[in-house]
Image 1 (spheres, rainbow, N blue to C red):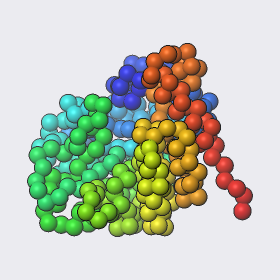
Image 2: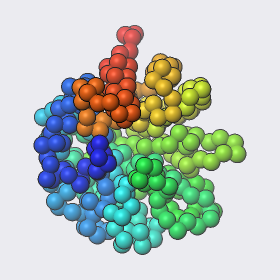
Image 3: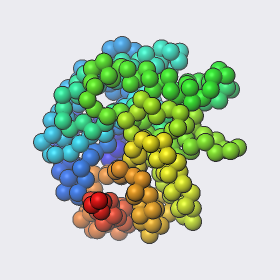
Length: 315
């Protein structure tokens, strides 16, 4: 989203120049990949009917990325603004919902299959498999007014949770691969996907759900004084044998010095890093005097100094 909290689909038609400017600013910052969160409600008019206007805008985005020299991490099925999730979508059964999600990815993959700008398709941001107790809502708790966590079922129905996750991944991967056998596929996972005795997990055990994924994308926000715990999470993901990308990182719960120590410790296990950009340059942050300006300034300096580029020693 932008600095005002708007999702891309809310302004990419009427304020396209803003999108173009942001891409050029990210390129100038040193980034080589942009993560785009595609909202389900913006792309699907009905369970089996993609919205043509959104697909046309996606075409423009692909062309912009190609012209700018940036890759795209296309994260799908978002319902970040709860009121924008179609009412018919929430009424679907589990199997019907999966079918509608497959239709979304089928339409997106068919549109993107020839583009050299696509780095990967991220099936969903932070999906969760619930326990056996039935839920009445597909979305998790909100954060800053947005619903980033989503459930792929309302109940596990006594099924092994990783098996539910694996079947869901298989359904969506098949929908993509019918059109596109070229681009990478992943899913953005919370750090508590790694099994921990007696503690809550997402059900997406990386050791059990990774077979059809090309790499593992994990979201890590190290906590103050707990850097080693975050390091252990990344190493657990890496033990699957799949490449690991830190798809979300930010000094949300620690300072930049601790974040730098975390980056240094896990760099041997990590193939790439994706952070945040809210449409405001370092120069604009430098001119500001608010706490938000200070945080944004510290983050962009960290990103530029520690992650762009993160060079590896030659063998």
